[in-house]
Image (cartoon, rainbow, N blue to C red):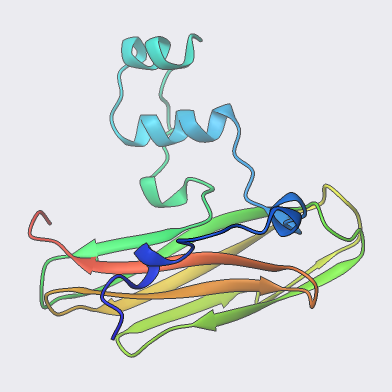
Length: 169
């Protein structure tokens, strides 16, 4: 049993050729981070210090931590509990102009990962596609981890999925 699981993934050498041609990217712009900060309760003064702009938080900009367009998925609950959360993500095609990616889910017992849609079809470079990932976990006193991989037969775009028990919940 690998206690480090997803936290140990990637330790070692990178493959620069694959890193330079990822196939898909999880792109996030300034407004994505503003939504994230607003969801964390930042004041207009704090936002101005960070962004050097006059953003204010509103219903449109009040995001959640788990919806930042980031390539990893993490959720936590108190020990012995179960949790389910829905994540919204958007990927941008930077690989082959015409391509189809299929979701490959690796989930050990105690972790459920559902992806909708499970197939993303692209017709051009720069095209964006959105999807949702529903993750459910039954936790004891530790963590469970798995992954979501978008695979087009050439590129494998991997996202870690980690659920852990926290005494701070």
